Image: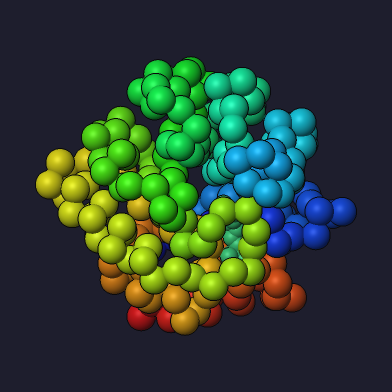
Length: 220
Ligand code: DX5
Ligand code: ZN
């Protein structure tokens, strides 16, 4: 397995200076994790295509975006994100009965596509989709807020996905989102995760590159 990569989640950033915050992790991030919440699918509201698109079009951020849609209507709003081939849009499996069609629709944006699930949703629902996806995002917490504690139940889900990806020889990244910090990253990497998404553990710190380095060190 290639080495684990890191994606800071901007949910924990200072939104009044979002572009500068993202620039502070540009050097150390594999991707910038953009949490999109609509107040319906999750009990919180963040940002949407208007903000994401203007950040991208400013030209000051070189790291790809990984857009995590925690919204009830990914069909309507997913296509409104301006993305390119290095960016990823991740939808929640609970929000559609036609996931394959939605994957096609999002792929029409010219980006990679990923799927996620709430912690209580059956992992069996996404296993048949793995061959069509670049990423499967495992929630380590109930989606909606940063700063929550990692739910260890996620480890079994990661192992299950890793096994299926290995069996099918798929090229699908397993990312883990929520509750990631130096004391939890080791367990998820051992279970088979390729990518760590961390909000508070990165943006809650003054020195962001140092925060990522500490998590990398915790993996060795
Ligand atoms: C939660 C979001 C996460 C969140 C993680 O719904 O999807 O991306 O930012 O925050 P931390 O790392 O603080 O648990
Ligand atoms: Zn997220």
